[in-house]
Image (tube, rainbow, N blue to C red; front, top):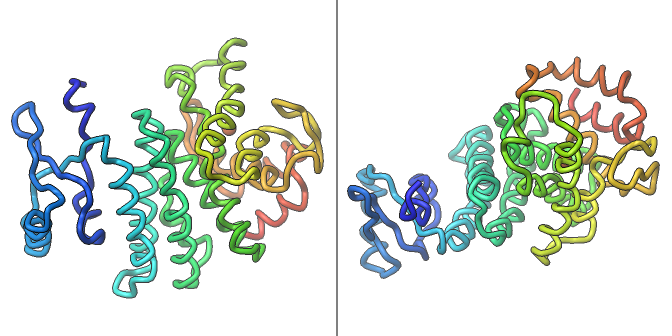
Length: 315
Ligand SMILES: [Fe+2]
């Protein structure tokens, strides 16, 4: 990638249609360079609005990475209206929200973007929650929407959505729901510190690689603490989601209620999501097969009550 193209990110033009006046500059690619297409001045915004309305905005548009935080703030801020837009089918609403979460997490995981773009996670999970509530649809809507393949950021979003559904099913209070959903979304942020070569390695990991992989819990704590915005429970979920109810997990070999409740929920969601997604060394399992393995072979790993609740969520 050239230095220039690292400075600009292609954006989804559709994301502009619901944001109103954009507070960031838009660029187009011309040969190997990027030139300004529209600024934040009223006349430029008018031009963009008119082109969007006429369906004449066909060129690829880019933003400067320095303005990404503003971009994500604006597009995620507009998701609340998408969630309640009766002109759209429930599936289309969920899909639009899901796609925005994909772009935020992909940007963070793959391009080492500013941590600040993660601030939009509240808007995304809030919009998804509204979408589930106003359309009166539960987990089945999410199941239809989720992409099931295995870059780490997709896994993270799916786990966040399982946690959100779990909170809904358990009728948790709004604040707790938000914490659980964000914690699920952020539980594996520490994986960004691991190289793709190790993260997606086909063969067995050697001892050093295993140690490195395991360090993602500590790395995650550091990233979330650095964001300085999230509740201690969110930090615990990153720290404890590989602990095991029987005390055989890592990094601290905590057991039973020494593991936070939210981390026990995250553990179930994390393992279920992993088993039902294809990974480099095996195909995706069917939901029932995954649940059979979890209740029979992996039993000691989970809080039995949480596992039972989770199963009722899916069935
Ligand atoms: Fe993890």
